[in-house]
Image (cartoon, rainbow, N blue to C red; front, side):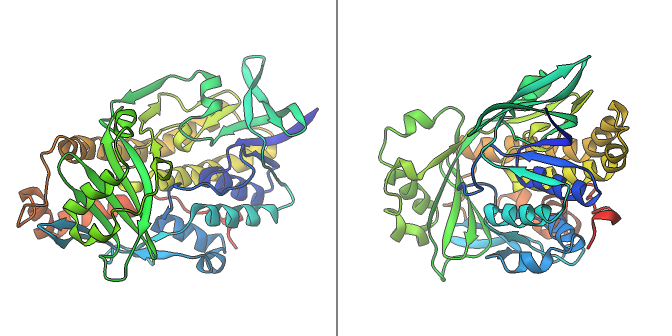
Length: 407
């Protein structure tokens, strides 16, 4: 019978960060990742200043600096055919005054390699968790599937880091609070020219909204679409997406044929929810498994990593001592619930005040000569101007690596 101290389901940013820190604390960790590698397109590629701080503390900043990265320190909004600066990260507190755009698979490989250097860490790829083992009123481990067949691993604690479609969360049957979201998102990429605007570029048009992320040689683009409209939209030529975008941002008119087919356009079903209780005896959920985030603000990865650091700091000693209890798990939720509530509250406001009006055609900026009044006020008052970049880039209650994990 296989046995481990902490079983982590999911090898995303939260799972690998959690596994690395726990292993540096001497905890026996087994991480199961369902895929055979980390090479999946259109993952979130934003690495926020708080995560950059953590990489410094963990002694991984030099390795991270070797990864292909683009530093984004501004947000521009096309208005009347011109790019207008609406937010800057250059005045943020701390060392890192930018968001690093890095292919997520490179970040995951870096964290996985660092974790593998710890003798108590085991990573098993192509091994999805399929269910939970329950004994005496508590979760006692997981069932899994691998190339060798079905299996079981017993664990003192199972931690779900397997995302918004969490198998572990579903198997646990924990109660969920969910809010309606008015949109889904398409993800695709098109070439970028040196003369294009830089940074993060939102585009608000006639019943469409886009967020363009500067990735050096290409734009990674999220297009917001009305919830449930994907199937009908795919009956039209894919070229219409870029024709519509170029109508709002004319400097893209030479790239309307950049998409070969609808296969180039990936659909993200957007959800916004939160578990009422993130834990039960023997089980803890963190990251999107505990609170699925909208892509609004691009903060989901940052929040999940912060959850992981808090969980590792709080649970490392009781896990190593074999004394972890449900009360310890409750401490993690208490620590992370306020940042979660604040962030999801911000996203709900963005949905109702920005994204829904954009999809209903009320925020078309292509024919305006100036910003809407709320944005003009935001730019004019320094305190208000600095608040959105701070909330997005640094968030609420940032976590720091515990001393035992620092290098």
